[in-house]
Image (cartoon, rainbow, N blue to C red):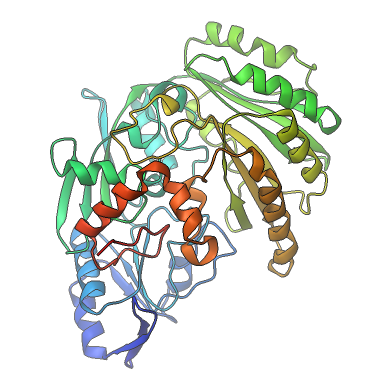
Amino acid sequence: MTDLCMTTTSGTDTVLDEATVQGFMTRMRGSLLRPGDAGYDEARTVWNGMIDRRPALIARCAGVADVIQAVNFARTHHLLMSVRGGGHNVTGTAVCDGGLMIDLSGMRSVRVDPCRRTVRAEGGTKWVDFDHETQAFGLATTGGTCSDTGIAGLTLGGGIGWLGGKYGLASDNLISVDIVTADGQLRTASATEHADLFWGVRGGGGNFGVVTSFEYQLHPVGPLVLGGMVLHPFDQAKAVFNFYSEFSSDIPDELTTACGLLTSSAGHPVVAIVACYNGPLEAGEEVLRPLREFGPPLEDHLQPMPYTQVQQMFDEAWGIGRQYYVKAPWVQAISSDAIDTLVTHFAKVTSPLSLAVFFQKSGAMRRGPRDQTAFGHREARYALLITSMWLDRKESERHIRWARELSEAFEPFTSGGEYVNDLGREAEEGMARIKAGYGANYERLLALKAKYDPTNLFRHNQNIPPTV
């Protein structure tokens, strides 16, 4: 073993002697990995295969005590630090170069209280774990649109999901969190304890600490919901989007939808309308009737299915390890000019794996509680998820360019800001885009950051730098 060179929060290098590193290791119940160790490359790999960063140390935490040790170690030695939850990391903020990565992927316990309809899940949990446990009791809460997504990242940034029309964002369903803040203290934040911090973690991202567990309110879901998609030919795209714009503007809370462009398994561009109806199946059939009748569609895959199957509808389309570049601007209305722009640019798509999808933020996701959470874009009706996806790293430039050009062309039709969960760091996005991502709540978040993380220890994220 030799002394270890690491990156500091200021971007300079510091050298830690072997005794210091060994001392940290002995205080860990989990493992401490460095380059060359068995398991190191697996630990630094996240869902987005484009992310190829090499932390100097990876603390694979076995519990809260390990997280506290890791945060204290990073603060004491002024180390650059990142935090990995479930590892479904679009922009790669979970992995830092040269610093300390705190890895929660081994902390995935889920404990359901079916009588109170609550659940507590650790910070490394993925929605596939969460749904497996809660659906055993016929319960669920809003949980994203892909089962591989981690609960931590999705919830801290707001959390759009298939149950959101009826039950709100994932963050709206939080009851409390356990969080290790920059001073190494474990705090419980809820409506009655550290209420300001509880406000901040519901939309403020990972700026305030490492959330080691989340407590959510659960709701009756299933055993079956109505889910799936209908497909239309690309040459009918404008008509389909116009229909979808009208249809999605007046739907019950039980229904959450999406509509977008993709390439079919046969290699042809198509338009897909995706739906999840969480309510009585007979009533749902009537609500979804217009989707079946319009066109008519090329294919109709709407059917009763378990909620867990809805959660996994996009798992194959968003496969683990592919190269991803994502933009997700907020959109208030799907206008004719917006449709023309989207269809024109998708006709020039550079990869058959790429997608451009309007995810609807309807019902309870839009209605509130506006003043009780830090999520800053309640009024927006849709997030346009522009996902450039490819396999060969050498082709990255042209695929990234396609997504950027579409995002820039669509700018006149956005309502301002982007979904925080799909934003990169300031170095990639610029500070103006980060501020816009947090919307009207940015100034309040600044003050909160100064209180709980005055030295900006938690900076390898969509960062809110403290005002002090």
